[in-house]
Amino acid sequence: MPAENSNLSESNASQNAWQQLRKELIEIGLTQKWPEALALIGVVHFVASLMCHILYRYIQTIAAGPYLLIWSVQLTTNLWIIRKLVGKGWTKSSPLIGILARIWATFLIISFSATSYSEMSADQANNFNWFKPVWASLSCFAWAVTAWIVNPWFVVAAVWTWAMGWAMIFWIKDAYLIYGVAWSTLLWIIAAILVRQRHKHFPVKDV
Image (cartoon, rainbow, N blue to C red):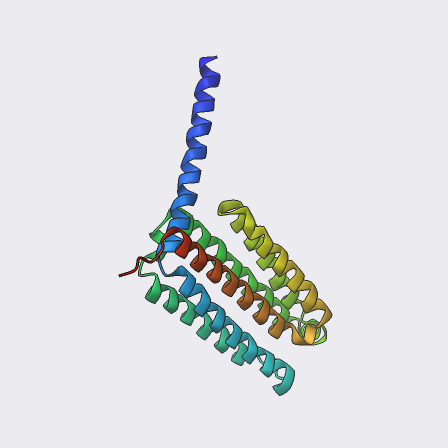
C-alpha cells in the first residue's frame, strides 16, 4: 500500500511538472515576440516558395543550385528573425522550446534528405517530384508531435498539412506554390491566435 501511494505521488508530481512546463511555454509564446516572428517567417516562406514555383513552373529549371540558394537564404533569414525578435539563446529559454527546436530541426534535415534523394533519381524527379508530398507527410508528423507536447489543438495543423499533401499530389506542378500558401497561412493563423490570447491575458492598459 505505501508503495502504491508512493508511485501515485510520483505520477502526480510528474504530471504537475509537465503541466508547469506547458504553462511556461505558453507564457513565453504570449509575452515574447513569437507571434511577430511567426508572421514574418510566414512571409519569408511564401516568398521563397513563390520563387521556387516560378523557377519550376515558368522558367522550367530543375537545376539544384537556385533552389538550394533560395532555401539557404530562407533558413538563414528565419533564424535571424527569431534571434532579432525573440533574443539570443532562445532555444534555452524553456526546456520544451529546446525539444521543439530539435524536432523541427530534424524535420528540416529529413526534408532536405528526401529532396537530395529525389535529385539523385532524376527520372522520378522529372516525372512526379515525389519528394514534395513527402514534405507534407513530414509536416504532418512534426505538427502531430508538437500537439502531443504543447496543445492538442495543433492536431488541426497536422490535418491541415495532411490535406496540403493531397493538394500537392493532385496539382503536382503547382506543389511549391501550394506548399508555400498552406504553410504561410498556417503560420499567420497561429500568430493571430497568439496575438488574440496575448490581448486577452495581458490587456494593454490605457495611459
